[in-house]
Image (cartoon, rainbow, N blue to C red):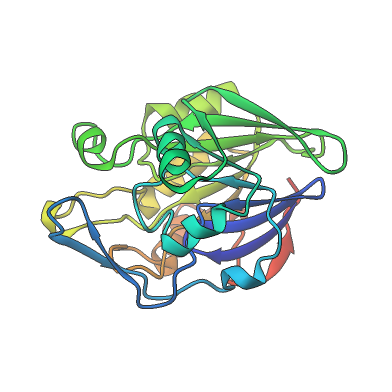
Length: 265
């Protein structure tokens, strides 16, 4: 699996000759956004993408965990989706992107799957996994529907690839571990916080990342969503420290912005 880190949770994957982009965030450095109808919560992209949309080339499929937050799908990312053959996302997100922006979409609820024929002729099964974008009471009201993705392909010798999406560690993640053999976990971290809700976190903390990794003991761990935005309260250093304390540093695979590497899934 060829993997290029663009930034935040945006990764360009090449599987079986097919190019797949996750959570397209492509606006330039310094782009600022307001959250919710009140507009009281503001957050800023402090890094920008490692590669602009013009340099990404053709993309066959996009995986969008949710469309309602700009750190997972921003203005340029949404415009880019118009050139993508199929965007797989939540059912509500699929309806919005199709009706408002003319984007070709496939909507999935947790545990539903979508099969794709890759360019090498093999089958990729994309299964929507459950995600809870914050504490149990706040997440449905504030964050709305979010999913992760489970990718299964015959070429993945060590197991499937699990992209957690924006979620806290909760029973839905445990269920993924019980239901599937996973060889690679691409995990959204950063402990996202907003001043309006104090210390409440909307993505996994570094310690939760360690506990998540323990659920998938044979999997490589690829951290995402851990730096470059104003609302992230933890960085790569926090993740490295937490995994070092747990004696699990060797399981981490760090993606460097703009560089393509092969991940043996």
